[in-house]
Length: 514
Image (tube, rainbow, N blue to C red; front, side, top):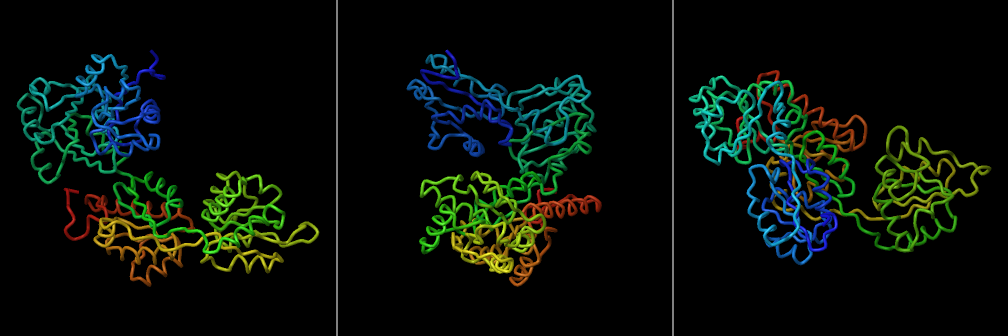
């Protein structure tokens, strides 16, 4: 029977990989997307549920009964299901009940964690050996390993294991790395030798899951480390924006090794009186306008929702010229199916758009009207600039921006207590609203702002501005923060210190040996 189209249900034992949700296999993601139920016993697997259909059931361990009723059940397993796994009995139960099953390999921590730590698992050595310390071991046998020895479940007994390997004949100068939280932004690695395990691990605070790596390959970490050396590695960065706007910014921060936390400070709501917008949409369809100018992705969203309400689509823009104030707005238009005719080549702002806008020419332009759907708090810069160029503007409130509800208590406490390493302010309103709903960020938190006006507002609230983007875009702001983080890291290394995140400099912060 094909496991791709089960008729009597299927249990798929799926390797969840080593920790980084992006290391899931394509087959695993495909099965999660089709699953009726998912069985998981690790909270860390939560991010993988994004691959599932809406309404998928997160179930207990009754997968045999569910499969017999025709369901596709995904049983998520840590790492690779067949490596030091406890699922053998569960697989046997499926076989005994004559339930179809599939086993999907996962990326094993034994290789992935080493790769993320910059340690080549088997470079130039004749042997790569994986040992489970939870099972009784003859360490004298493993002391003879001529290559890389990887030890699972050994952190609690690391010092005793080190002594046993030395007693078995391994030199006490043999390099050792201990790494926990592997492949995630919590990854933390200590490099030492067998003889120095006790003093070097004394204050490290390691917890499982963690790996011990013994062998000369550990010595290559200085040259090959790429993950823990990212400019914002492990930085918890607050992104006070609306959810729609912050996705690409958060993805960029993740690429620098950061852990972004999106906190809505602005809620976007429909206008109090929708009639003005209704008339504008009607005018757009009946040919009242020559141009439509969008000053934000939210304006695009507001018009798109009105279109859907009236059963219209992007074809209603045929014959119209469309302008967008910047890249994020242009992306929202393209997603809607509309390609903008005009984008500022310089500054992405109302001023930048006016600088590029053609003057009204009665010979070329049959209509002199521009529709400007915008927020209720927009400036008049664009209207004034277009009027001066001979255009007549219909300035229409497409949406209202109001202050969002306060974030949950733990986030408020982290903001005020120095739990965040940095905060990115993309406008003056995000400064005012964040302070209004959650309080002022702690003085150890790095304050990064998008431009001079936002810097001025931050300083008015008593905040020290550490980073400012060289161009007023969210992408440039994230890049500027990464550059700041890289300089801080390099300065610490040059001084012979261990790089520390800003939050680790607050009083009472756990020092964890770095």
